[in-house]
Structures are given as C-alpha cells and as structure tokens.
Image 1: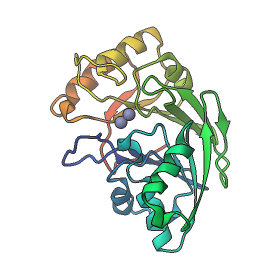
Image 2 (image 1 turned 45 degrees about the vertical axis):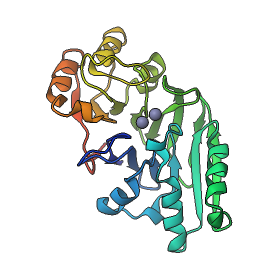
Image 3 (image 1 turned 90 degrees about the vertical axis):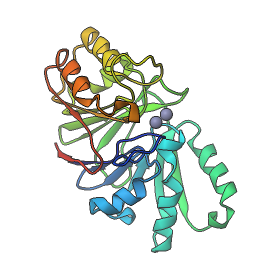
Image 4 (image 1 turned 135 degrees about the horizontal axis):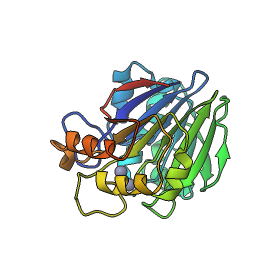
Length: 251
Ligand SMILES: [Zn+2]
Ligand SMILES: [Zn+2]
C-alpha cells in the first residue's frame, strides 16, 4: 500500500503546505482522505490522476478538509467521468446538497453516491477489498478517524482531533498512525493536538505502532518541528516524522 501526503497544512496558507489530503493507493483502489483547498493541484503534482480516484473519504466537513471536493468532481466531469463515491460523517449528504444549491449549473452533470458513517462503522469501499473502520474524534460533533486495513497492513488517519482514547484504540497495532499536530509544544488548545497533549495520551495508552507521522501543521509549528519530534520520542518507541506535501510512504 502506498500513502501520499497531498496536503499537510491547515486553513492558514503556507509556502509548502496546502490544506488536508492523504491519498491511499491500495492497489485495487485509490482512496482520497479529505480534500481541502490545494489538494486537487497536489494530485496532479503527485503523478496520480484525479479521474482515477475511486472514492473520497471525509473526516469532517470543515472547509480545510472539503474545499476541493466539488472542484475534483467537476474536474472529472470535464474529462468525461461522471460518478464518484463519497464517504463521510453524518451530515455529509446535507452539506453536499447545499453546496450543489450554490453551484446549480453542476447539479445534473454527475452522480455522487454518498455513504454517511458513524463511530464503530466498518465498510469496504466499492471495488476494493480493504476494510475501513471509523472512530469518534474530539473535534466536531460528528468528526471521524479512519483505520484502513489491507492484506494485514493498516494505517490510521485521525483528521482533526485532540488526542483521545477512541483514536488510540483504533490505532493499536497499525503500521502507520497519521496524527494531526496543529500547534507546538505548550500551546494552549482544545479540539486539536499539540506534542505535549499527545505525549500525555501516549503515557496513559502506550501504543504498539511503528511510525507516527504528524500532519495538519499550522504556521505556528514552523521552527518547532525538531522540538515536537524530540519531545514525542521520549514517550514513543517508534519513529516520529513531520509529514510534508508530496511525501510518499510504502507499508
Ligand atoms: Zn477541523
Ligand atoms: Zn482542519
């Protein structure tokens, strides 16, 4: 399975980080987790093609995670692909319908099949033999983290969250945990993660995971990356890496 970080940034622009997006290539499917502004361009830069994405999976409906969803579906339509599978939390259907109300000229151009998910759900995206499990995160009422498993390999993507037991349980035993780390050590924050919030959780719930990749990095994190990694290494035996846009990992 190949994972490509498309966007590792947030709602505030930075030179090298667009908004949230992670592409998971399972061999038989190409799944895009979140699709914030800038992600459509990054798909092009990554060498993948937007028309080959088999499904879009949303963690929550904040703009920095969904800004390019309609742009991607429109880009597909412009080159002749008119279907898409969209998976997301409760409220995804209403969000998409309301978005189409604004862009009415697109309404009958394509068919988007929407599946709404809740914590504890498990599903297999159409055309794939991977299994995706959902867990609640501490961010919005309906926000979700996802665990994708394929042929004994597994990865968790948290979306936005405070460190929480539900995510730790979901991540137990995975090869790769992609955890948000919005703000630097000591930054007072709720609903997002800082290195010290994550280390407190890791002290309570030691994780059997090979690699943690930190993403969803606000500009406040610039110059504080080394400090974050050094801090977390005291509490976690595996590797800790700051993700970058277009970074690729194989598991
Ligand atoms: Zn958010
Ligand atoms: Zn966000």
